[in-house]
Structures are given as C-alpha cells and as structure tokens.
Length: 356
Image (cartoon, rainbow, N blue to C red; front, top):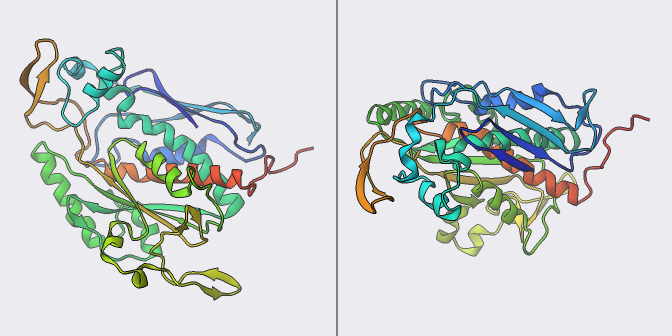
C-alpha cells in the first residue's frame, strides 16, 4: 500500500497494489471502516468536521476488483491552517515539527502536522478495509481491536463477545465499568486543556499456522513495523509481552495439545507466533498510544529564527485522547500485514472468481 497526502493538503489517499481480481468491492465497504475513524463521533473527539467520504478512482470495475492498483482518496474539506503559522519556527513539544523540518530542510508541509498528522491514517484504514474483506471472505480471518487502557484506567478481563460489543461505546472498551471511568477521566483532562494516552489490544482470529518469513521478515517484525507507522504508537507487545520478564520457562512455554485433530496450545503466552511464524492460535498484540501531543497548556519550546527559548500555547481542534479513534487504524495495519503474508504463502489466489 502506498499512502499519500497531508493533514491540510487537498486530500489523503492510498494506492493498494496486488489485490486479487474478482473481489466484490464497493465504496460502502471502505466507508464503513472510515466512519469508525472519522472525527466528530462524540464529544470526546476533535470537532474537525470531516465527513471522510471515499472515492474509488481505479482498480474496481462493475463492482469487482480488476487486479490493477486500487486508488482511493478522501478530500480534506474542513481545514483551518491559521493556527499553524507559528509552528514552522516554534516547534510544538511532542510533535514532529522540529524533526521533520530538519529532515526535509524546512520544505515539509507543517500545517496541522502535515505528513506526520494522525490525519494520514485515513489511508491506512482505506487499505485495511480491503485487506479485512479479503481475509474474512477467503480465509475466515477476523481482526478485532479494543481499548484496554486510558489514562491509567485498565479494563478488566473480557470475553470475545464483550470485545465484539466494544464498538458500541465512545471509548471502544469491552469493560463497561472501566468505560464509565475512562469517559469521566477524558472529560476531566479536556477541561484542563490536557490529554491522555492509553493502550489497544488487537486479536487476529483463525490465522492459519505457517505465516511469516524469518529471519528479517518475521510476522512479528512486519506487524511491529506497520504498527509503529501509526502516529503516537510508542510500544508494541505480543502475547505475554513485557510480563514474560517475570515468568519462568515452565510458566511461559505454551504446551501443545490435539483438539479435534488439530494442533493447539491451551495457553497463548506466545501470542500466536513462534519463531516469527504463526502457530495457528489467535495472534494477540498490544500497542501503547502516547497522550495527544496538542494540548492547550503553556509549554516550553524554542524559536528557531532567533535561537531563544520561548513559550507556546497550542490552539486548534484536537482529540483529548486519540485512543478510541486509533482502534480501527490498528485493525487496518494488522490486516494489511496478515493479508500480505497470506498472499506470499499462496493462500489467496490471484483471481478469486472466474468471470469468463
């Protein structure tokens, strides 16, 4: 997938190459996922009024993919760049204003964070929508993500059915008691002109054993690279993650067993991946999202024109917590990687349905 566009540019888009021919695909398939990510979903998100309506420009003909590259765009319509003139010379703490300026010699589009804004994840979700449809229809693989922590408030144990219902509340948390506390906490920091971070768990169900290409293209490695491409992601864990440091080998090793003629592991501390290759158990990963960098509190920065320290107060429309809107983005990136590995493993044909 090629991603293009900037936060305050004309559009954000994606070009997906390698999609099999014969997949029934419509604008509604893409729009369904974009609606989950778009701003203004609740009082807990930015009020930037983008409808994020997708246009499919190529690669789909008479309702089916053709095998050619699929180009999709979403036009940026509600843009207010007036608040961003200062950031070119007074970089915002926590943002990529300074590093992008150094890397690109000051030619980067700094408006709204430009290429480094969470706005670019629109393209991730568009590509992920296609990947999720292929995985679901061809391999019956299901990708589910949900919020497990916001601002230090952690969700308790939940089952698969509860996780599937997490979409029905504004923070996308499967634990109803934790949900109430998270909402209250977000509203509190919103009033304080501050922000919160959190964590998201993603499950990939029914993934067959054997996906992954060690040693430099392991399934964990490719998933990590994709997840770290999401702005604000600061850590990625699989299975037991950092808790593995507290366990013994006898505790952490997942025993093998046979159930209905299939090799399984009763526990899943490995997170569905061994040696960089899927083992047939659910792939479980977690990502940590840092607090939204744009906050209204005064912060120390520098003026790059006179090379002196100064103070900045960020204006504009920003999420007090981006975790809920990042849930479909995490799903999209996981789906893109898994479908790529499935195609490489010849589990998905180049033509899904013969027309002639």
